Length: 229
Image (cartoon, rainbow, N blue to C red):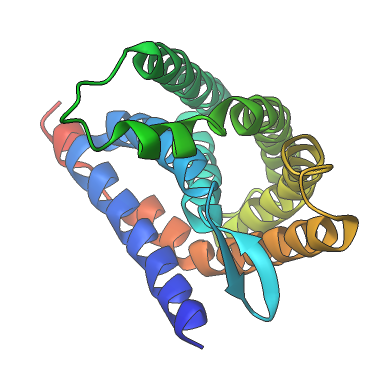
């Protein structure tokens, strides 16, 4: 149960950090969070773990937190700001991929100890990142549009949980299908791939439910920088 408890704690830790970023830096903090978590999640996803009895990739809760960030932006600042954050995350990931591919081309010094590890991690990144970028753009834009559509049906503040969970659960199903299909199908046997697909979506489902209270907290937060304007 170690991974399960650690995973729960890590998810809550991510949401707390997101709120801290929002409190101190406002809208800019959410933009920064999307960029940072998108990059880190795509590094963490190279590691597989055993959790809730299934094989899963690391990075699910960190990546899922980007959906909370864009939902908060959509809720408090509008659809255009949420879409801007989506593109910011996309270009942050693209820059990471390109710069690390250049970095790995340098011949290491004899005293170097990191080159092999960098190749192990970032050598996998192109296939994973291509899958992630396609899945990210598709699912995040779907999330923004679904959130906006649901808000027209359920506009009350108390109904934020419907907007948040409805948009995230549907968009992350698409994200999981696209990502695992491109990144891991053919890499693992079908039964392992299916486990990764199911476990990834189940974990994202759990994280989506867990992030709802943090969304309500964010709605009440008055960022420091916006108070001074």
